[in-house]
Amino acid sequence: MSESFTTEPLGLDRLIQDVAEVLYVEPADISPDEDLIDQGLDSIRLMTLVERWRAEGARISFVDLAERPTLREWAALLSTAA
Image (cartoon, rainbow, N blue to C red):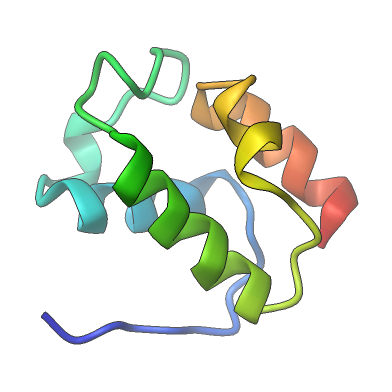
């Protein structure tokens, strides 16, 4: 699988796309309000996302996201951390 980095802001739509990519599902299958652990996200995939977003300038940590396991919470956090 090739990594795809874009300059799209880290808003909810982008987060849904990125999470769907690491979970190998369609974006429509990702619920922004459901716990991502329940949707299949594990620590390895979460770290992949953290590193991807850090490479794009987000100032976040694994713990920041792990403590708030929904995409809606991530979007709020990343809107202030980018």
